[in-house]
Image (cartoon, rainbow, N blue to C red; front, top):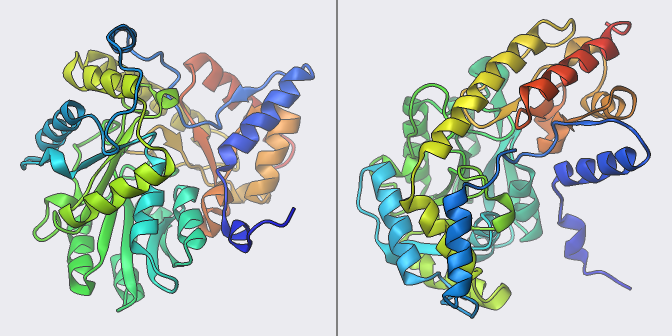
Length: 388
């Protein structure tokens, strides 16, 4: 069977490949500590699950509007307005099955072959995958460890031109856990306005701050009209399997994006949408408790990593990932990750899973118990004991 040539440009998300490999090893009797997958290890709160059960009993089992159930869009708009401090029109909300479609549909709606898209590297791998797939030119915005895994603004300014159609920002960042300082975010906004670029702001980790508070690039002058906010329920409410995401779009993009929803998935599961409304309207204590536990894990994990010879790790300010530097081990990122899985019994990701500038690093998710994190630290230290 002959695949379309564009399939060669479509990447993947390595976390799922490593998870499958680790599961195969476990089936063979190996004991594996899972630090590869980026999803909260908490159950979806009970009131959200109950809302889904009620929605089933109330008959939410049919098609709904492609852009989302109107009442759900209203709740999301109010939620976003509360976060950002400005009014959000429900008509600007498009609900999707998970947040990834916001990336894909944005690229499909905006990017012509040859248009340039600036994306963070290290960064979520689907950004580049989608840019390549639709025929855009992917221009990496290198995130530097010495800058807290944020971009060099002067280098970013030098990389934009008349072909720059879209700039992607992700704060807090996956995989680095970095947060873009407010003054640097404002400078990125100014650059976007200067070249008339649209900004895709991935804010799915907005609840996961360990210091400070969230700032959206949409809050700066001239940005609401050119910013797409990507968000969803997966991380904040431990709803990864529910597949509930949404975008806040400038008005001219709402109809085209809704049309893409119609043509691809018809609509987002109605029960999931009703559960999302319960998540937004309901008690937020489960979110705060989860973030507090992640903060404790972060402190324990970063301290442990920095005590291991050959490893150094910047403290992440958000999300739930550590991105330690492993250059002193003398191993490549890929070799380190492969050997840790097979020889050490720890599933983690090579930094190159997140771009070429991830070489020399690995990513560990601390969405696991402190007990298992300590086991992983011990195994990493033992693995490196005779190698560094």
